[in-house]
Length: 316
Image (cartoon, rainbow, N blue to C red; front, side, top):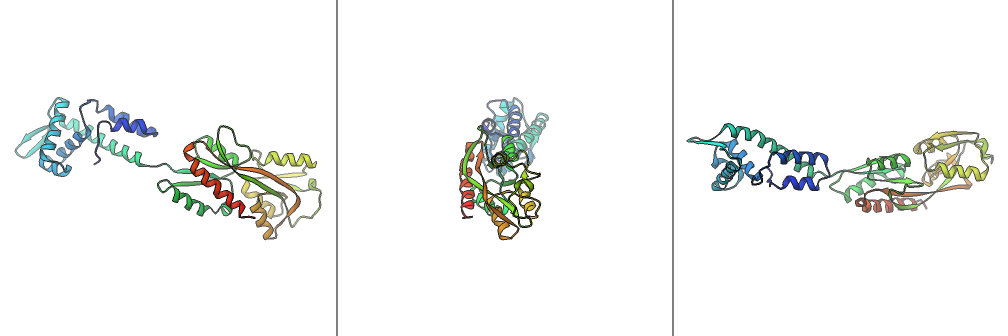
């Protein structure tokens, strides 16, 4: 049993953001309306009801016999009726005592549950838009777990627009995002990421980029505006395009299905594998940010900012 006071519910209600805790606090406090009543008195009442003896209840509660006797007396005075009938064998509940017992047990369960909920810490939910291999996902999670030993770390991989949407809806606490970030969010700049135009080794070296199939991101991707500006400046009207998610563009270019801009780690991977070559002239630059809403997550955002920045610097 935990030790309660009559102010416990008001404290939990005032400081808890959990709607469930607040609801239970309201419901439980409404059943203990008499201002003089203390919940430790209910604990003593439950102990006597369970053991049928003041002396046994005193041992169970680890308090003196006069102390537990006083608790019962004060509770009976507060309620205005006797809870127990004294006899030679011990203490029997009165009819009103049995009624109080039912409510006291419910209050006990609710308060224990309230404290259990209050002790829980919410997970830290982080959205990542970079390939798990490059960011060393398991190492990152291990470092985050060390920084937040009381919180579970949840990592979600998706494209920037999806992650920003989930951040806005409260499904994420912070995320990485390329491109423009809505003003309503807090953000930390990581770096400008230089993307290179990659051509599969299975395709010819012809410079007519109009004649090639372009592997491009989905319509809501932050890479789309700079890509369209590149096409406009270069006078390129692609013969055909192939829409792909962030994590599949690399695979499609590797398979020779078309050309496209890739992040530096993917360019390096395809070049080393001999699956694609880098166009010597054409690049795009897109800003990468750590984005969050609640200022409490700034320390975690700063850690993620430095971690990702070092990963890109390690590419040389």
